[in-house]
Length: 434
Ligand SMILES: [Zn+2]
Image (cartoon, rainbow, N blue to C red):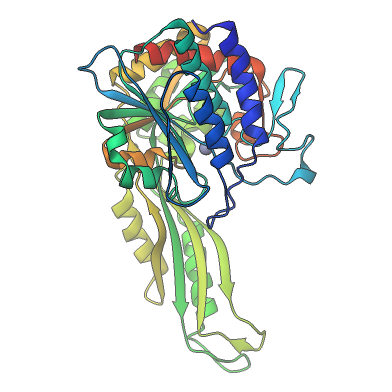
């Protein structure tokens, strides 16, 4: 059981990490090193020998290994990223990098994504050093740079250049799971992520005939692009149930006493009410047009027009996604992947999933654990190249009215001290026996 010092330290570390501004603006504009040093010092304080690894100066990753008691067991990767998305101070009630603790709540950018989990990992590992606890499996602890952009300086670099540090790791846990989802009718659901949609950021290029804006032009690149963008934006993607989403719907239907009729999933989602939010973004692929770029003068038809689309595909859905884009863009518009990341699928019947479920239930007996698929992506995508199956498990018990999903990358990101204490207890319980 996590000791009192661990409960104090998780709060201190969450606040301390928030105060180290690791804003990732993309394009290499970020410096995680101070946060990496902060984490490494605390791991060293627990008797570990953390390695500091950089592909680019200042973009520091930290990796340490804790030896388990069962030499025959596979290792488990426990990872958290150190960077955060930007925060506009003028919009916030407190300064986003103050790490202020007010009325039992820790405020600041990274409070839920994901300096909270980084702090929980540190607090648990240090409490084990004090109590002489060793986990069953080898644990590889990794704090990464660059998750909020390309991961090239973070998990991508670690997977490509330092695979040896992850030897024996078959499974991993990280952000975006095991938080309290309140359904508004008194039920508390703890979704644990067992999959991620893939990312396909697309660049569309329409070509046509440049010319004077007053002349007839039926090869107008802007018109062609606009038509393709409209077809993509209005496309109704067909329903596709992956094993994780199927399991999620089955468990949610059971929880609500609904007959899980998979012939009419839209109707089933309707019946689930607010809980449908946990699955509705992952029952199909999606493609949202997000950027347009064309022209330079109102009376000149440009020869080229460009658009960007944020596409996401389900595990197993990438081929269908690409074929659909070919059809929707048509002959006059080319498209390519500007950035592409794999989709992930993790088994929900793995023993590890059961252990995560048990750990949550021990400290939140009123909670209902269900698997879910993340609509976006995490570092688990990069680590999957090493054969590591990733789950989203960063436990937090949140009071009603605390909208976790809205706080993610949101204004006034914050986390209750009680939620951090719960997280430490659950993580401690889980990691000992994982
Ligand atoms: Zn994150």
